Every structure is written in C-alpha cells, then in structure tokens.
Length: 115
Length: 113
Image: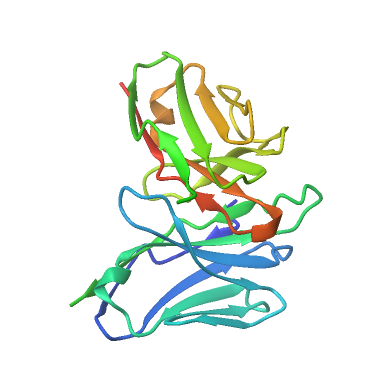
C-alpha cells in the first residue's frame, strides 16, 4: 500500500517556464510534507517543506502548495533552470508516538529542463 | 563541512556472502536512518536509531541488521545477500532541532553477483 504517490515518472519543460511536480497521499495522519532533490551519484537534498497548518510555502523560485481536502501537494519551480534537472521526491511524515519524524517517500519524478 | 558520509560508495558481493555498509556523520544528530532504494522506486525505510534505541520496520527482512556503536557511526549488515537485495542504500540523520528534515549521505550502490 503506497501511501505517497508521484504519478508522473518524468517531466520535461523549457528553461524559463514553470515546472509543476505533483504528489498525492492517502494517510490523513500525515501532517508535514517535504520535497527533496536528487542528482545522480548524490544523496537526496532537502528543498522545501510545508506543515499541514499551511496551504502554501515559498522559498525563492520554489513554492509548495498543499490541498488537504484533496490530499494533494505540488511543487512549483518558476522560472525553471537547466540546473534544476534532477529527480524530485515528495515525502510525508506523521508525528507518532516515537517522535522520530519517519518519512514516507514517493517514487520520484525526473525533471528535465531544456535550455 | 558537516556531513553524512557513506562507505564504500560501490560494493560488490557474492550471493550469500555477508556484507557491511558504513555510515558516519559529523552533524551530531541523534537519529540515524537506513533506507533501501531500488531502481525507480521510493526510498524505503529499513530501520532507524533514536539515540541508542533501535526501531525496526515491520516489513524489514531478518537478513538486515544494524549496529550503532556511537553517535557518529551506524552500520548496515546484510547477513546473506540475495539477488533481490541489490539496491542503493541510503543513510540519513536528523535531530529535534531540525524538525523532520533529514540529511542524506550519497548512498552505497550494492551489487550482488
């Protein structure tokens, strides 16, 4: 049972345009969401996060939107740059009794930004 | 720079031959995680340590064990690797001060022959 899903394995956009990466989740206990970026031969690096008490969080060119009723979040990159080409993972967390913030990841979306 | 280091980056082992993967961190984080990621799949949590407390995921095979001798180091032991254990193994750390953000190492690519 996959609790976090990224249904688009890949996305290709032109430099300067908007990239929109989508993520759906099924567990209503998730209360914190993160996006990670991964380049080949490197580990995932944190990009941006959002708490369930918010519906939007912005950091420079990156904005994450959360729609709790739809159990859907999206990452917007504007404007897209060739250096943004990477695999993007969505992750979700529910603050359980262990308080360790365990993350559940989606399968990832490979973004290609063409010059 | 503070970081998470994984050694080796590439590991080749034979079917059934025990193998140990290593993770070290200079972040002084109290939580360390091991993930398995197979091609085009989501990273899957195997287990984690909260300080010295070991937390195993329910579906992690018994073939996978872990040791954390001190705050800085954590090891993943695969007792009898099978062909299905070939994957990228990612180590990550976190601490209360970082919220739920996890810091990842570069991973170890395990090949089983």
